[in-house]
Length: 213
Length: 224
Image 1 (cartoon, each protein chain N blue to C red):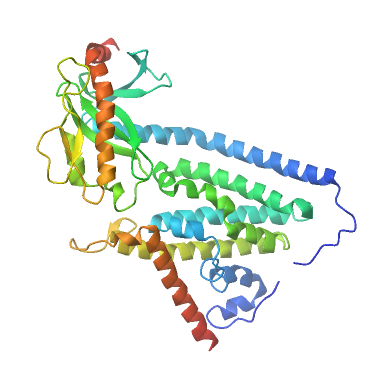
Image 2 (cartoon, rainbow over the protein chains, first blue to last red):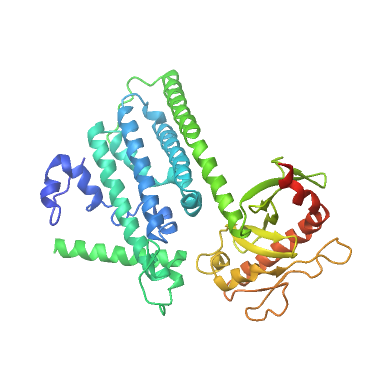
């Protein structure tokens, strides 16, 4: 594992090896803003804060469970069939999540639609299984999954909140603006997703640059 | 990635066993989750439909499902097209909830609407499933002016009881003149037209059947 020298905000936490696995996903290696992984669900279901949270939590659950299983089986799975095994494991947990969300709320399931099943091909999960869980013990893998997962939730929520506030004039379906506010329809359309993502990426890169100079 | 030395090549048997083992374990997990969530999923879906029926046929206290078998309405779920008759406290037929679907702008639109055989009008409307563009086409589910169209939309039968007297059409917003016209939505032209034609198609098929077998539907509650 390459552990870069930390600077700034999370430096003290990150210098501790056990908490670093958790913190790196939240900030330094944030899956969306730094690694730019899993863009398809990021752009597609971040049109409201609620959808973004649900999608983020579903992905976190799948990430956590598959990291645990991959880490447990890392000595059993032959190298030649590891990717196929990972996909099998990930697909199982995605199917379970799909049923669970259906049981929680039909409405939520309708609004997330096909993107639940598409968690299977979210490269974030496969990349954590391949790059981390298959080489590290279960404790570290859990921390890594939780860090990456919450980093993903955080990023999705930032996007979803901005898009919902501007695009529908509300947050979690609570109206924020007076009657006369004309919602920016473009923000809930796919194009709005790109705009918002670009602005957040710009913001995070500025922060990073300020820290390094 | 550090390259693992392939000194002892993994036998295909081991690969097979590992994949098979993982497969069986995963299948078990999926079946358990499916079985565990199924009752609740079915209950939620039934509840959602029940709510929709109450919404489109106001005043319903009890619903009975009918399916169409060889042109006759038969009580119960026969795995075919279903309509839901709603009765009030006194067992009087209030209206019938009918599902309709048709091509919208993005994908199929599924709607549920209430038909009052007495008034020969549509008395309620709800979109069940839509993938129309958020903010534009999906106004068919939310826009109040649009939904007000379906509180008394005329779908009376023609003189020989074979179809509707007037075709249900969607007109440009603000141009509604007749009770069988639907006031469209600016910015959701295709979606609102689609809703008009879904109702037209479905009503011209179901209204004659319902009117022809109205007695059976009305007497239903007293049989029980």
